[in-house]
Length: 291
Image 1 (cartoon, helix red, strand yellow):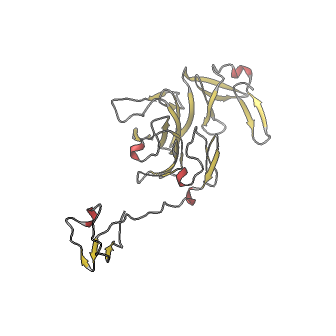
Image 2: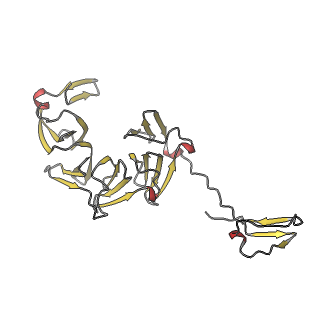
């Protein structure tokens, strides 16, 4: 097999594309495949090391159109707004938007003078939580939420609560909950609250460094994250909230039943000296507390 083949899942048969069809691809190193449209008028998109191609069914063969030349297309997905479908692709040249009707291409690139741009042109991963929201990650720059309708980028890094800025994969559970594999464990991001709950080896997961976009979500919603040492799996609904321990605050100190005379509030004191005869002491902590 060279370049492309078709797998018949029903009959479990591989069929090579015709040689004259494959020869029209200038690059046989294929990194990504996706489709747009509805059967029988579907379009197959092929991302290669040196460009993007669309394959449209033409009787028994395929019509091949080169859409982007001389740049790697590593991953792709499509979104749909009413009847309009859009292809999104990533590589080393920013975020690429392709109109599947006209093949018109638009680039979103890093602009150091604007906060409303991608963090870097080298994007390593792309996913979506709905038809209007994309999630992008980078090798060393955390991850980004892209609002397609508003054309707005929002970045998340360590200062926002992310445990590590190496993000290998992002799995949206729904529009409000995102799971992220990083270089320092897994992270549960709550979109509405804008909060992170991080999980590492110290909390019991068997590994906390995830390389590459090795992930899977099955039909029951169970998540799988893998690397060279193996993989872990869990269902997000089975994850319990972290136990919350109150901060100890002493509000009162009594010696032989009388309030101790101190030069400042006891909660501000780092240490207190008592005479050896002051052997009966009592301290008070509030029962009701807030973290």
